[in-house]
Amino acid sequence: MNVKEGKLEEMSPLYAYEEGMPWNPVEKIIMERRSIRGFRSDPLPDAMIERILEAGRFAPSAGNMQPWRFIVVKSREMLAEMEKDAVKVIKFFMFFMDYTKGNFLRRIVAKIYAKIFIRFLPNELQPVPFGLMSQIAQGQTPVFHNAPTLLLLVEDRRGVSCPPMDIGICGQNIVLAAHSLGAGSCWIGLIKVLMYLPKWRKKFGIKYPYRLEVCIALGWQKPKADGMVPRETQIVEWYDKGLNDAPQMKKQGE
Amino acid sequence: MKIKYSIFDRFRIPAYDKSSQMQTGDLIFDPEKCNGCGTCVQICPGGCLLTETTTKVDILSGKAKGGKYGVPHVVQMKKGATLCIACFDCGTACPRGAISIKHNFNPGYHFKRLTQTSDMRYPKRG
Ligand SMILES: Cc1cc2nc3c(=O)[nH]c(=O)nc-3n(C[C@H](O)[C@H](O)[C@H](O)COP(=O)(O)O)c2cc1C
Ligand code: SF4
Ligand code: SF4
Image 1 (cartoon, rainbow over the protein chains, first blue to last red):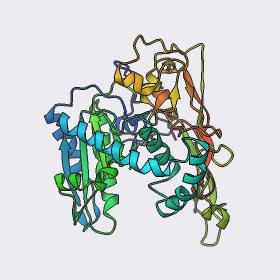
Image 2 (image 1 turned 90 degrees about the vertical axis):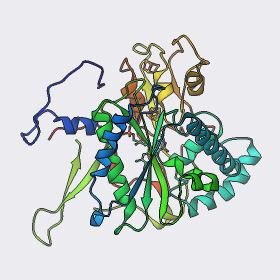
Image 3 (image 1 turned 60 degrees about the vertical axis):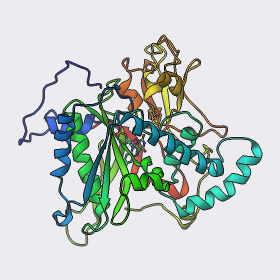
Image 4 (image 1 turned 45 degrees about the vertical axis):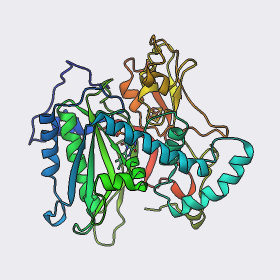
């Protein structure tokens, strides 16, 4: 289930559907895109980054407001400093909150108030980011995966309805375009921790109406890691009879 | 659809390190196929894979050399939970197809997943 170099499978043409046909190129990219966390040290060529950004510029957005601002960070010095500072902030928070590590006393005491914090910030401190931050604080994994380029997606909070949705759509256009060109990418929400430091808010001009909550790491995959994975099946409700009939429950993916 | 999410679930935060309150991902490594190259260890988002001789940071920093690190395993915390989210990014990167998922990630109580089943399937062509 791996896309290795030189292996070209049969693909269906675009704009056609037949039951059970092989994936078309767009579907193939969607299914085989993986978050890439190992990169070559040389960045993508600037022209290629510009081409990838075009996919973002042409994303749909509520009211066609395009509530985004793009920042490309290629400076090695800056990337190193961002990594250092993000680790610092995460270490600070985890010093108080990480009840999964350390001695017995620490685990008991920290757990009491960690659970209170989790109640107030259930999304930021959900088990997955919590575990990731714990590992980062222990020096077990980096924040930005040593990517040679970070693409910051800055949100203009004055967008129509729900601008974070527009940011997500715009970013996923960028990600899919990047993978279709043979590059690799990884969404990184943890860039948020840099916003606790006035230094980075100032540097990137993040004040009202702007907000920075996510960035995309971009570069050449090393190792090549795109490929299909299994995912949980979903129960889907199909309302396909009368107004008062119960929906059909179908298992999606089976 | 009957969604099973009680008031008790809603207000109870699970202990993140306890396997009795959280189902975390777990993998099976086929020792016949694995050549100990360490690719999966390097690629795991949280650094939750180890071998006897190396860790993710060792590989990233170049401290680990040689590419013969032994068969990896998923690290378990004291109370049994792992940090594996069953993303299977390690599985696609593995050049030998040596990894498979034992069970998926499904945190407990407040965070439990409601319409996903634990059956994991590859994309299906309808
Ligand atoms: C909004 C968003 C934020 C994310 N933040 C991070 C992050 O901070 N660090 C990281 O390693 N991966 C991050 N990811 C990647 C997810 O972990 C990844 O998409 C998920 O595990 C599924 O794996 P796949 O992308 O290979 O299918 C993020 C993904 C999204 C959509
Ligand atoms: S499935 Fe994902 S989280 Fe689990 S060990 Fe593999 S790469 Fe790491
Ligand atoms: S990537 Fe595959 S072959 Fe290499 S160490 Fe991991 S399981 Fe073994």
